[in-house]
Image (cartoon, rainbow over all chains, first blue to last red; front, side, top):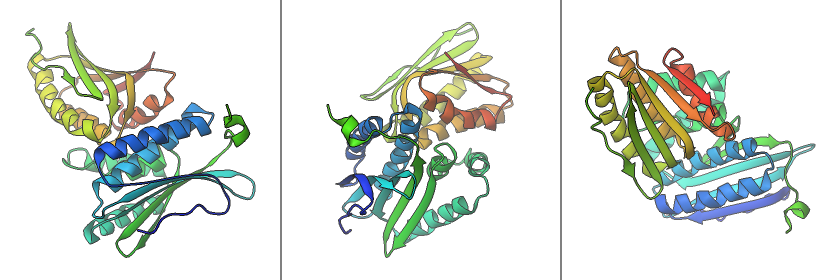
Length: 174
Length: 125
């Protein structure tokens, strides 16, 4: 897996590469929680991004077949706004890649993410083993858009949403 | 009514504490509902469902005010629990007590309310 680099319009960039263990993922998520709380000055906005990062970090950890995974947060400047992007990367089995691509395509073509989430909840309510709800939750509950890229056996999922206000670097000092 | 036969669960980062008051079974959840919590929570809910049936309680109250996060696997455990009760034909009400200052709690649990509006309610405190 190549080392991620920040795009040129990234005002803030945090990338953590780790081996896919539950304990490490939890440690990484504590850092992400602090990062979101520090950068975003609205607790509701911060908790939406934290939820998305949590779901993605758990996904890449659970389904990784490679020796390392990465989670990246980047505040990127668009023409007139800032967008916070969460990128999650792992290597996964062909079966897992097919399954996640199917779910992501359904999610991206759903006209109403909340309705899609509710339908998934009803469909999977009594199926044991996996929740299958994480990605739909990121869109429906978090209000984030989700994109993805599959290159060989590497999967990248990007969850992103505009951020109205964030604490610029001079406010973070001290 | 018999005494409660389901015990508390305490791990490093997650806790479940049940109490029985009259015909309401109260369950206080604390800590973080993450990957490590999902399996114990699912297993706990299977035992809890049997207790709800045995004790014929009319309501289960989940106090999540001291909960820091719920992942989708933990939410799924709630979904299975609620659907399991409904599948048994029970009219047991499910109430969530949330901390109004923690907006994520209501936001996360609203999906359960939409799923079963006749059974599930959320009270901000």
